[in-house]
Length: 311
View (cartoon, rainbow, N blue to C red):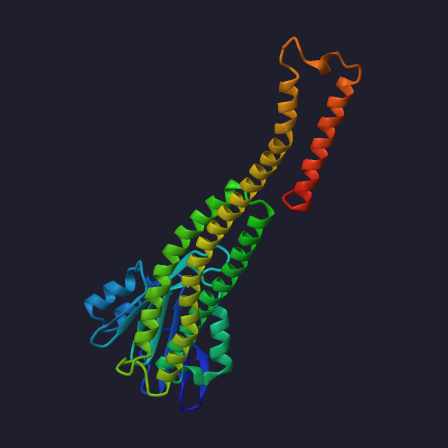
């Protein structure tokens, strides 16, 4: 845990939890609820029963609840590799911030380093909350960039092999994942919006601008997820269009081949009739004449198709 002292403008590490005085702020981070219970931190805080329940139980969606002396924030960090949400609860006091996560998250040490190198980032609880939420928002932005690359590769695969059935399966799986992630994004945006509101108890006049800037950055995530749904629909439409075009080319080829053989079939059928009086049957060069006629007709028809650019 870290303690900021306003008198010396420095951040120091501390091993024991004590309620900070008026010129101090405190930041605590736990990687699991069990680790927090072992420290017995909540026993030293005058915490409302509802606030205690909200803080110790992970929510299924991002939210923020304000109580008499505290606020409880439930937020989600998106892991870029697995795209799985990591649930995090934050207890916001007047001069301290207590964070507990389901498991270890990547940006903990980075945040500690920032608070040590820039002690002014801990001079007010709203600043600590802002820099914490900034890392949360960055995780969503990284996921957006990653999904953009994945969907671009998916779209390219349609042009490589539009008949591949796996493409449709991938689109369906991605639509389900996006639907779940979109619920977190929408709720997270509502949380950031509430923290940037003027009547948020744990923000000062200056930090409100920071949260509004954070909300502006997060709006890119919201719009990106909306466009991803349209992109997936476009991939399916593109695949169906390419499939239809492929089938049309096949039907066109078969039709042109049939058109070539229709007159040849007619000639073969004509001379295949068993009538007694057919002069060409007794002609010495009749067979070669018919073969030449069939070949010439085929060449003429194919040349005509080529001229019309049908073939």
